[in-house]
Image (cartoon, rainbow, N blue to C red):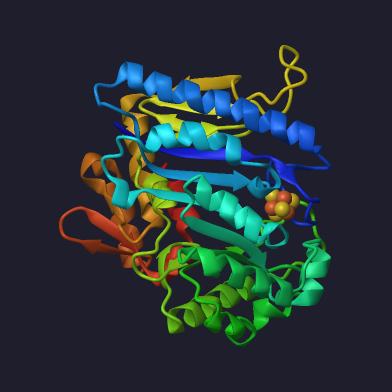
Length: 363
Ligand code: SF4
C-alpha cells in the first residue's frame, strides 16, 4: 500500500499582502516546536496504523510534501525518525519525492543540510516576482537579487528545485512584459516553475483585468518553453522528468493523507479536513488530530478522481461517464478540448485558460 502525504506548517515570518492561505505570523519557537512534536506523534501513529492494517511489510510513501506557511521556520529534525520508518521497506524508492516549500529568507546552508538529513530531495521556493517594488508591496522582505542568491544556494545542494511566481499583482510590470522581465531566470537552472494569477481574496485595489493577466501568463509560458520548461498542468511547467509527482498524484486521483492544521486528505471514500485553529476541547495545541471526515459515494469518488485529471496533460477518460459526452463534444467544437481515441479528452491551449468553467459544467 502506498500513499502520498501532505503536511501543513501554518507559520510565516509575516503576512504577505495578497495571501489568504491558512497561516499566521508571530509564533514563538516554543509553539513551533510543540507543533512539530504533535506532527511527530501523528506520523508515528500513521506508520503504526498502516503497518497494522496492511499486509505489506512496511508502509510506503510515494511522495511527501511539506507546505505552508513556511515549513523551514520550524526545526524539522524531530520528524526524521518517523519519516525513516516510512522509507524503510520502500518498494518504489526511485519514485520517492520529498518536497519542502522554502521562503528565500529561510535559505541557509544549515537549513538546507537539515532538510537533506530528513530525506528532502526537492525544493519549491516562493519567489513570486523579480521586481523589487512589487516584492516590497507584497511584503516579501527580500529583493530579486537576494532571491537569486538564495536559489543559487538551494541549487548547490538540490538539483531538483523550482520556484513559484505570481502575475497580476497591482502595478507589477511583469504582467505586461513577462517574457522580457523574467529573462534573468534563464540562468537559474530551474527544473520547475509554477505561475499563478493573483487570487484577489484580500481586496487589493487596481488589479489588472483578466485579459491582461491572461496575456501575461501566455507570455510567461512562451518564456518558460524557450528555456526548456513544458506546461504539464494549468499553472505548472517543468523540464520533462521534473514534474511535481506529489501534485500529479493528487490530480491523477491517488489517495493522499493530510496532516497538520488546515490540511485535507482523500483516502478511499473518505475526505478529511483537519480543524483550523483551536477547538474548545483542545485550546492550546494544534488540532491536527481533530479531523472531520466525510464519506462520499463510489460514484462521487470516481467522478472527483477523474475530473481532476483534466487539469493535466493526461486529460480525462470519460468512459465511466457517458452523460459527460455531449458537453465534452461541445467543448471540442469550441476548440477548448481535443478528443483522443474513443473517450479521452484533453485541454487545448485555449482550454487551459477556461478549465474552471469546463469543470463547472461537468460537476
Ligand atoms: S505567501 Fe507564504 S509566506 Fe506569505 S503569508 Fe502566505 S503562506 Fe505566508
